[in-house]
Length: 386
Image 1 (cartoon, rainbow, N blue to C red):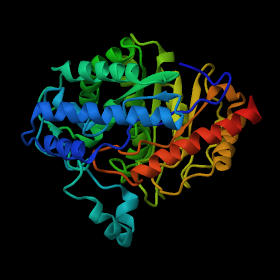
Image 2: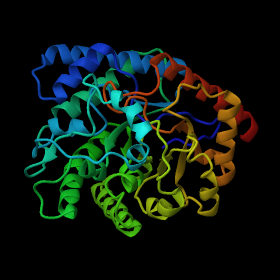
Image 3: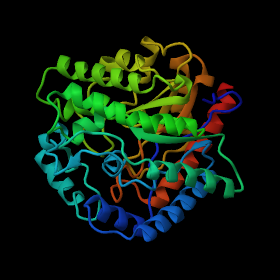
């Protein structure tokens, strides 16, 4: 994994805006409605070309395909794995239900024009990875489109979900214990983890479960039970990565990619030691939003393990305010001082910009403006730190 040796590198957390045509197709497919496969592949290709070109134009160093081929960052596995059907009953985040007037504001967001992450399929049979073709096409398309561009990424990455977020949001109606379900998911996801790295990409594992589930699935349970869940998932991830070099993996942890109160978010201090146990080369952390912007201090008190990098979220993905480059630079500097070495810091975003097709808080034009501000702020910080 590249370090920020000569300048502060920039990246993002994975998902980027899809075209309206692609959104409509992915929404239909997520509901198991018929979709013309040729039409879908063409829309994926066109949208992938678009997001790669725009990342390069914005100055993104470590970029990806924007997850254009996927209906969301985790429910897409239903098309590649066996065992899923029916509908999960996913609890709404506690901070949303705690404030009825806020919930009323959010209800229009749960519309029929987006993929639902709150009513995903559930596990009704044995979960196994049964179809590698979509994974192989996705990686091949990314490589092909990058070769077409005038510029190149310093390093490409691709995402895959944590077994924990699938287990939490695609609930279990088959396995006798949660532990058995998580282990089965990790064994299946090993196929994706290993293939992505074998194709030359950095692997990012998306793990909102390691923070967000404290105020979702574990909202009414003791903190200790949630921390045991974190340990279970980290152990399963480590088992799935046994053949993958840790320096080729980054772990993305967030508290939910939505514009909400977040008053019940678990503090980073409660989970950071367990995150450090993950067999990965970098942590991707939300550090720009108003609830977690102070937590660079946690990293000063609990230093990163030797050799581990920090992808610091310095752009908020839930607001249409475009961060001033000076603000971005300040956030990078806070992270660098906490870590003690700016070369171990990469500037990123708190989360993705369209984690499910049609579900986004930030207007598309603003997304690219935010990524340009990310580059401008990283340039300022580079001059001050390196």
